Amino acid sequence: ARGLAKPRRFKRTAATMSAMDSKPRAQRRHVVVLGGGIQGASAAYFLSKRDAKVTVVELESVGSAASGKAGGFLAGEWGSGPTTALHKESFRMHKELASELELETFREIRTLSVASGSKGQKKGLEQTMWLDGNISQARLMDDKTAQVTPLEITTKLMEAAKGRGAEVVIGRATGVEFRDVVEGKGDEEGGRRAEGVVVRLPGGDETTIGCTDVLVAAGVWSSLMAPYFGLPEDAWPITGIKSTHVIWKNESGSGRDAIRDDPAALFCAEEPNGTHLELYPRSNGDLYACGIGGSDYVEDRTRLAEGGDCETPSRVKADVSRVKAAQKSAGILSSLLAAEPEHVGACIRPCPPDGLPYMGLISTSENCYISAGHNCWGILWGPVSGKLMSELIMDGAAVTADISSFSPSRFLPKARRGGKGRKMVDVDVGEQW
Image (tube, rainbow, N blue to C red):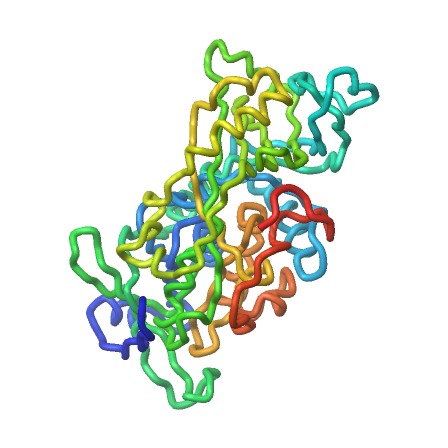
């Protein structure tokens, strides 16, 4: 979407007629969700629980972007201002979903603030059996945090939605078809309703999926879709923070069962080599690390568009030059992390200028919505965001939390860097960008 694309006018097809006419008005909600990450999967899950028909359009596979590659750190008390309710409610919901979806990777853990130092400075430190290196600080930050492997919860949410009739279509959404209505709640141009989403399938053919509602939930790629709704290209400014992560796996002979048996998330002090490690122990004993430095700010939307170096999740490549830095910094803290990590990956976090998500009705339509730009809290906020979108779409109002501060129309003319990393209430924690 390099130019200002106009929304397509509605043309009836067999698919759109089926979605519109097959059931009485009160029962025929068919929501097309653009994006198969945790925001889309969670929305599909809660919409399907309300007996809505859901079709998810996903470019590659469910959880193929950040929702399958993030750390999965959960903190219920780290919100402030408008995000307080998102943190608290979604943390509670994660516990419920872990039971309901029979997740194997969710567990409550404590979180420590850690800094490296010289030997002999470890007196009185918070103990964890695998933190056996040169440590000058290891204090408790929060003993009521948790961790989940993002790919598992994203996949399980989508599987549960599919069990209630939701469908996943692999393809690229290329436009939205509208029809004008005489009276409505749209902008000054008059009411307008989306009634079809145009999708280009992997073989190149196009199809139109009829719908009663559209939800944009495509992470950083959501910014490309604003012209589909008659908005300028910069309507939803999102900086993509492309970062590399590594995983030390608990393979046979690694000795990393201690990471499984005595878990603690670690937020580490910044090191001279540019790392600001965040270490997350997984339930199988793997150790996930991000904050290894060298993040790439993807601000040019052409990089995300077709032909760009980040046009799809699989095109997002790791910066392997930072792996040695991560290994050195982690190895100082623990002998179990002195070896080269077994896995290296990368993903893009979607970060709006103010660090807050876009959640709400798209102003140029009566039945189109967005839930995107959840920054580094996408996995934590996924459950509550999906529930809020289901409330907004099905009932006309989000009631579980106040989303007025997340209006999709609040965009700024230019993204501003800084202060967008994790916060523990109002205090910066971990890597900032």
